Amino acid sequence: EFMAEAKAMGYSGVEMLPEHELPQALEAGLELVNLSGPGMTQGFNRLEHHSTLILQVQEAMRKAKRLNAKAVIIFSGNRAGQDDREGIAHCALGLQTLLPLCDELEIELHFEMLNSENHQDYQASSTKYGLALWEKLAHPRFRLLYDVYHMEKMGEPVLLDLKTHHQAIGHVHCAANPDREAIQHSVSVHYRKVLEVLENAGYCGYLGQEFIPPKGSSATEALEELRGSLEHLKSMCV
Image (tube, rainbow, N blue to C red; front, side, top):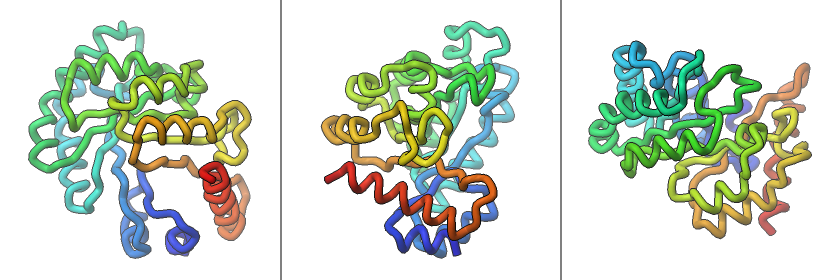
């Protein structure tokens, strides 16, 4: 089984799994790092979505607590012509209602910034947006999910961001750029430097690798790709 094989080769956690794969991960002994919440396209930046999203995120947080996951990932939603300042203000209004439940359940909310090429018209497509929201909410259980691939794609100064704003970051994602493959295929992102910056900043969380098996690959081939990623990471930590 894929999950068991991943655990055996040295992976310790998984994230953003679809519902039907959660039992497999738990049975394999993998930690559920987080659950993915709603709102990627219709998000907290629009007041008209708040009543629905708040209930959905509350449900996701309670599920995370039951499954011993530590966080729920949340999103801004698409821009649709909206000014960033208005979007940030609206996000803050909606998310602040969830903060008491964060404390009650001891669950974090991780706000993810995405590039607006793969996710067309996504509003929170810069570090600046996420930081403005983090500063506005100023709550220890609200933090940013910094995706190295997405922010590098948007031309953000990734190494400087990770060094300067590490206190705002609750979780880190990675993938190869430019083709969103496993990290050993990365051309423009130098992950050895990323790891050095994270270590020097005192980051102790997971580094989540986006893994999409190569098109047409068998399960065995996909596992070898996954093994290659782990070996690549280990080689950079020596």
